[in-house]
Image (tube, rainbow, N blue to C red):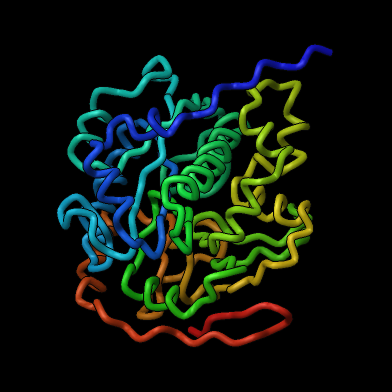
Length: 325
């Protein structure tokens, strides 16, 4: 059968089209500890989420933003694709947002159509085409960050419906090894997935782990393969229906022995309102996922003054490490 025409790669120039050159130069001069990428969508409900994160948790000390001339340990970038509701272009409101905040990365990826009733901040599944789009954006994020930031020790993927207690997260991150680290809530193989992986609402990879992930040749092809119903088995062969399982699956397929899991309990990384392992927010909470729009400000009022916490201890258990509550 004829080989399908692969989709074009997003060039760095295209990805950074709406980031001024002097900002990119400033990023390259900085010594970031971590780049946190948040795949998100060019629709109004998601734009509100981005604004809520920027006006709350990205104001913690340690976050590099336009307001502080991008000085700080953690750079947060929003990763977008071209949405069908705007004719697969970027919307005018997104371009305004990008000009204002200078933290928006624009891929050439076409956003997949949502085919289910899942809602923003809710749990569940967006439909295969949309989920594969999320996996494409996730691959792009790691590949792009490794290239643009050739010395950054960690790259993470988060969600726009999470609240992050940045000072605690950074204090804990600084205690982890610079190599082999794969940190977050560990999904243990069984049930739906045949591999161990870190859940995608907050997954942090050491640079060498990210390099291994993006180097997988079959995945490099799949992320550029146009979506079609007939090709679904190919996408599913690397779990591209769930971006977090895809990362674990690829590391497993590559028999990468150099991964050390740092696992979180639901006392620290958890859902609120809905999803697996719903917990109330407590003093132990670090990543709170599936938050409502009204929660960001409440959480910032609660945790905003806790700016120099002590790192939490972790210990070895069953071949991986686990953080205390």
